[in-house]
Length: 273
Image: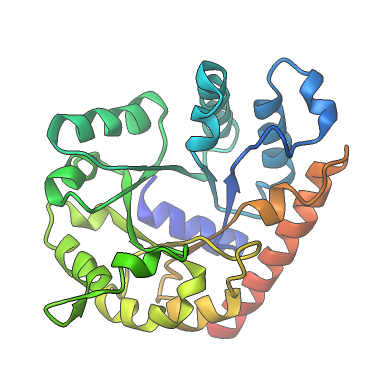
């Protein structure tokens, strides 16, 4: 999916909501455990109930890898279901990969070619030769970890090097990489005070923003400083939506939570655009 197609979908739905599909078998409704593939059936129900409210889904790959081959098959079925039934939805493999040379190329092929995701999250620590293999894929996006929402982000990301915070150095350097127009960036909602500085460096890039909802991030604060002329945000909520209920009404409850966020987003867009 191209950036222009994503922007068109945001404008059509009046939403920049991304829903994280982080499936924990200990948290899903117990009646699903009797089915052959409870992870996929859970995802399918959530997707069918919420696809009109969001523009993206983001499976966290660790939640599938943890269940071995069965989990990976559930992931395959989920992305295939999305691509076949809701091709207008943007898909993000939250894999946080990053290695040099041929290894990154193989990671990229796994997520872009085999699984047919639109994008994948990548760690920048090893530099451009770990990221450029992902950027080489046409109409695919590489979402670089820039300033994350966890407490440990302060260990390195906000420390200064030559008077410049490391996360800013990552942003500036990444713009020089080949096919950098295919880059997006992860910026946590719990770091809302940094968005103005980030927008000075990246006025038009899309930012994937986790941390709204269960992690305490404020949608209003994120939008105040983070919106660009083309919206430029994908705001993710995972647990706050998909685990709204553990009963048979779980999909309806998820849609209720997603509707509240989408409506708040629509009000913000109407006020600012």
